[in-house]
Every structure is written in C-alpha cells, then in structure tokens.
Image 1: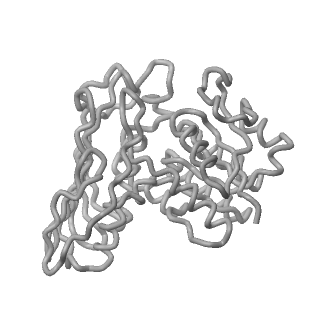
Image 2: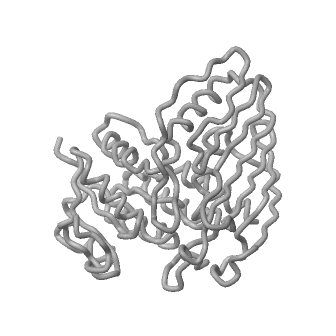
Length: 336
C-alpha cells in the first residue's frame, strides 16, 4: 500500500509538530499546510509543500483529491467547524485537543463521521508516556483492589509570555478556558483510567489573569465521585510563578498507593502495592518546549504512527472520537 497522505491545518507550535512527525514517518507523506498567516511569518521553511490560506481553498484544490487525512491543529474554537468541512470532503481527520468546545459540536462531528464512513482520531498523547501505559495496565489488572481516592494536581505557569494580545490564547470563543487548553490531557487520563464522574462540585478563582484572559478562572478545586466507585478531586492553576511546578496523580486503593509526579506526570514517585514489584519503565519524552513555557509530553509521533497503522488495517484507534467527546462532556460539567 502506498504512503498515507496528510495535510495539516494550523502552523503554530502544535501544527508544526504534526508536520514534523508526518515527514519523519516513512509510511506517511505531507502534501499541504493551511494557515491564514503568510509563509514567511510561520517558520515552515522545512516543508516545501503548498500553503493554503483557508480550509476551503485546500479542499477546492487538485491536491485535495490525493489527501487521505487532515490534521486539525487550529485554535480550539475552530476545531469542530474545520472537522465538519474535512469530513464533508470525505477525509479522515486527526483533531487536536479539545475535540470541540461543547458536547453538542463534538456530537455533530461524530455523526458526520459515521455518515461518511471516515475515522476521527482524537489527540491525547499523554496516554503514550511510559508511566501512563504502566498505570493503565496496573489499574486494569485490579491488583490495587477497590479504588478509594484519586487526587490530580496540575500546577502550571501561563503568564503574559503565553497570553499575547494578538494571539488566540485567552479568548473565550477560541480558547475555551483553562481546563480545555491546558489540562484536558489530564482529564482524559482520569477518564481513561477510572471511567466517568458524577456529583461534580467546582470552585474557581482568578488570581492573576484578569488582564490576560476573557474567561474568569485560572485556578480551581473540583470534587467528584467516580461512577464506578471511589472519590476524586482535581486541583489546578496556571498562576504558578515563572515555570511549571507539577502535574501529578495520587491513587489510594485497597491494596496500595501510587503517585505519578514530576512536571508532566513523567515520574513514578511512589509505588507501594501488596505483593507487587514495580517494573523498570522507559524514560518519558520531555514536555514540548515552546521557549517561555512548556507543554505536555512530546509524543505526537505515536499519534501519526497510530493513524498510519489504523488506515492500513494493522491497529485500532488509540483515542477514538467517543473518548474525545467524553472529555469535552466532563469539562463542561466541571465548569457548570
């Protein structure tokens, strides 16, 4: 089978990451990029492919006939609209988090994908980090017994180096809020590991982003029950001075305790489980480095590998559209 042919919408940090991973994969090929900014301002010199000013221009071009997959890395508020356009053109899509900024739009994307028989890949690359893979296997094995408590802490720095006046970050209709843009990866891990939540109670505060964002929270404490049993809480903030502090998850269960910590849940800090020996894990890839700030683990190559393998009928989707929808649903309930 020939190489899987991609286009990427959005040439910001994440869009360029997608383009790089596509060109690195020997079974994929990058055919086009889309961005409203001129080529000379985007830092895409490494990619000698056509640049289109809009999704509509791309889909109307002769190149569109050759494209198998379109990766959507535009600002959050455009994800659902761009997804619908690409699905209507009968292309498979890869959607950066979040899948949409509300459950209704995410459901529309899924319905359209079913109509046109195309795949929707939701990007949740933190699932690929070795501690995440390990803890998933451990939880599924039931070795820890009954789940009692889970605490998720996400303490990051996002200041005026991130929220620039001419950018989309911090705009309510394009960004969506702190939980959507910064911490949806970790909410996805909660759902992936322990299932859905209920009885959600949230308290939010805005400590130092009054002049930086249109939304009203930069920090919060969220309490909830897991539908499958156990209680949980999430504490988050983007008010940390100068640099990220931690992203950690502590699990308390019948037969032991685990804590995965570090800045990006990249280290197993505690593993004390009855009749269990902690395996040696591969090192976690570092967080995406954007200069003034850092993001989640640089695992996008796994996403592209999975897309290629699925479309060649060698694998199943790592994060499917329904899981992407569920993360949006949970975040909406946390905000409400």
